[in-house]
Amino acid sequence: MSPRVTDDFHSITPQLAVKGVAQAIDWYSRALGAHELLRHTAADGVSIMHAELLLGDSRFFVVDEFPGSAPSPQTLGGSPVTLHLYVDDVDAVFQQAVDAGAQVLLAVADQFWGDRYGMLVDPFGHRWSVATHIEDLSPRAMKERAEAWANAQKQS
Image (cartoon, rainbow, N blue to C red; front, side, top):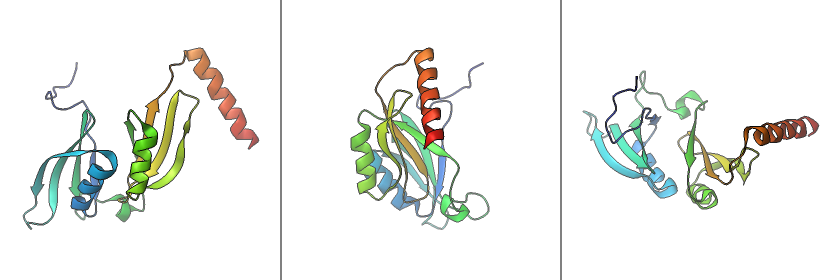
């Protein structure tokens, strides 16, 4: 059974807690091309309790950090979660994010699974992988490349 989802959403929608969500909204717009769709402030008139952004064809939520209920990666000392973003030109989007202050974790390069791919951390502590699909592989070719990659990692 498929979940009941409005036409504007997909089955899963990430929500990111950040310190300084207004600055994060600006950064996601400048660095990744996100568009702000709505914003609700909290009772204090300053904190943002919910904002909705559109990135490509997918929405995600951002909220200000609220102690006890929505800690940010900066408070937690990092995040084990990586958001994966497919784009038409990974090199351009990746460089735009770096120019806007993202930290490079893995430089963009062609990967064995058929993507041109890189990883970064945004200024708010969230990890992003960014990719452009460059080739389709058969299951056999994928297995061979994965094995070759694993063997190369053992030797380095």
